[in-house]
Structures are given as structure tokens and as C-alpha cells.
Length: 239
View 1 (cartoon, rainbow, N blue to C red):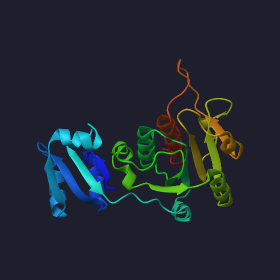
View 2: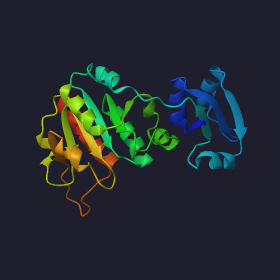
View 3: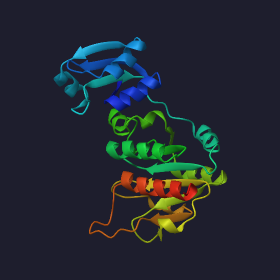
């Protein structure tokens, strides 16, 4: 089955990674730079009505849809070796993120703040879909993602590799600003509705929370990851 991505940034990054097999353009599409990159790679272009593209992928395609080689997951051992190149390894673990908008934004956050990669589980987790790629704004091409069967077993492996397991919670935890992140960190971000599962919380070394002063006492998973990743980066690389 063909895999599609859409949107100018997502397609441009996929082109740079030599992932694009074919491109559908809306009749009125006029992105000269992007079209030049497509033509330079001798990729087949097919013009279609805007409504046809809407039916194919939805309405947020920006006039361009690409057929691509599927995204590949990286082996966990390979990811850990890559993370060792950092002064302090930083990994994200996602516990049952099912909203593609959240997942795409988390990938974008991970790339922006220098995480070595993301670990997701095989079940009850949104995959590397077209929407995820679009929301990531092309960051999906630059962030290694490992898929595992059992997160608890993965946490044990990470601990053996010297990682501190830091989970997030809404309440009953320490302020995220009070912990020293200048060490190997695997940060667990929980699902939109249930948060981090009790078993993963039990197996964590530290549980942190983001203090809030508004009437709504929670933020979504992607916003939480942005706050935490930004803080970790700032602590590791201060002015």
C-alpha cells in the first residue's frame, strides 16, 4: 500500500532524504523552488484537481502530495549507540500517544532540542503516518525512532546502559526544575488521556511535574514535551 505525505516542508525534507517516488501537484501549484528540486531528481509529477488531493489526504496538503518509501524504524541498540555520541544521551519514550497531531509535534520538539531519538511501543501508539509527517514539518526525516514490543523491558535495558528514567505526571511529583538533567536521560511522556502508565511510573527513577497557575491544570503531551526538552537543553547548555 502506498504511503503518502503532504505539505511543502514535509515533501521538501523527504526529497532531501531521497524518499520521494512520485509527486501529485494541484493544478494551481506554483512553488518554483520545490518544483525545481523535484525535476532535478527526475521524479514523476502528476497534476490533479485540488478536490482530488482533498479526497486523497484531506484538505491541508498545500497543493502537494508525495508517494514515498515508508519510514523505517531504527533498532534500539543502534539508537543507543547513536545517543552515546552526545555528551549526555537524551531519549524520549512515548507511552501510548494516539493523536497524530501530538506525535508529529513531539517529533518536531525532539529535533529542535537535540534529543537523540524517540522510543515508541508497537501497540496502542499512532504510527508514522502522513499527518504525523506533516505536523512534524519535516523533522521526521531527522529524528531516529525505535519501535519496541515492551516498554518495561526497554526501560530495564536503558537503566543497564546508564540512563535515568524520568516520567511526567500531573501531580504528586517534584517540580521539573529541581532535577539535575546533566546525565543520561530517558524522558517518558504519557498518553493524552491517561498519562504515564502505573507500571512505568513504578519503574521510573524520578517523576516530575510542570507547575501551573491557570484554571486548567494540564497541557497536552506535545506542549509538555516542549517545556521539558527546552528546560533540559537550557540546563545542559546555559548562557
